[in-house]
Image 1 (cartoon, rainbow, N blue to C red):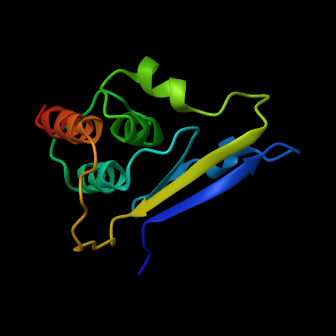
Image 2 (image 1 turned 90 degrees about the vertical axis):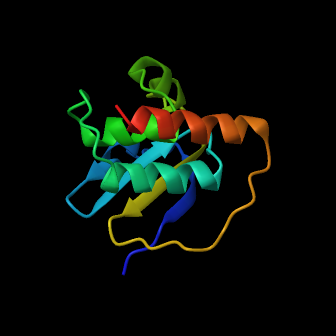
Image 3 (image 1 turned 135 degrees about the horizontal axis):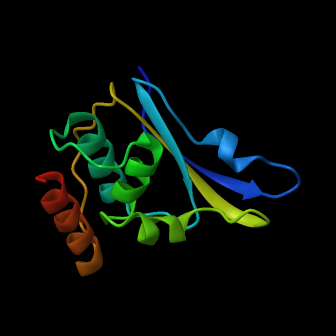
Length: 125
């Protein structure tokens, strides 16, 4: 069984970040500059594979990006992507349909609560 993966990447020296971003019927992978809280990542994975809402965003990796950034605005979510000539740290996030996560997380900030609430509301359509 695949599990939720969060990896720190060193971007530069010819690393093609776009080749890491992918989707198939079982897993979705995205690369971001700023890592969201684990609770938001887990919620994004759940909504991505179990949500009933039909999004207007056709590219599934971009839809996952909006969930990771707790927004329905693609332009806002794109601010957290890796620019073309960027060199530095970025984060690869991969989640799969088969991920079963049952442990509880402590929500540590109001911003985290707002992000989780925003995703929950947006997932209702």
